[in-house]
Image (cartoon, rainbow, N blue to C red; front, side, top):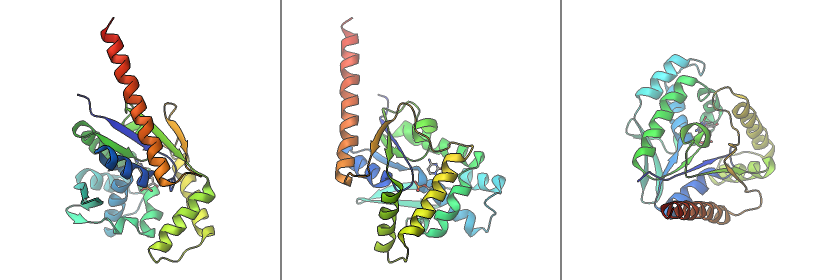
Length: 235
Ligand code: DC
């Protein structure tokens, strides 16, 4: 049977990761954090002192690195060439560089191909830019999580403060609108709402409500598919 894919897209800090992770856990699907893959490649590039414009070298890294996303007792770990980089890829220096690294066509082709392979093997909740459009255009269901810039900045500030980092609401608002701008204007797979995506505005929703909503949308789609195929069977 064809593997199920729930593809989730949306701007930075719209709650994609937390929602996708919890939806995957609830349905017993694998959580595919595509952003983590771009982040890991960015970390490797920074360590090598590469220029973020150097498409050739970056593409080499994306093609030849071993990336593993593993659910270890309920925590999602990211491994780069067997090294646990889960925490390192969330550092501010990665946030700053990742948008520049992920614009390159070669990098995207290499990572998209790794993502498609996973979609052949597992039922997935795939999260990230282009998962609804390029990686899984025939996903079972596509969801676009939207959210107000101010609310997103607040969420990100709380996340950073929780980790003991110093930041302000203004700084986060500025950083997020910079990322939105780069992510929506770039040539390769810009952030955009797929016409088939169901838009879920998360500004006033709790995480629990977001998860419920996505699970309900998926279950409804499955029910419709089943009833469609069984009615076809009676023709
Ligand atoms: O979702 P995130 O914040 O971890 O993503 C980090 C960056 O990676 C984001 O600025 C855009 C890029 N990205 C991408 O280009 N394509 C994806 N499928 C996922 C993320």
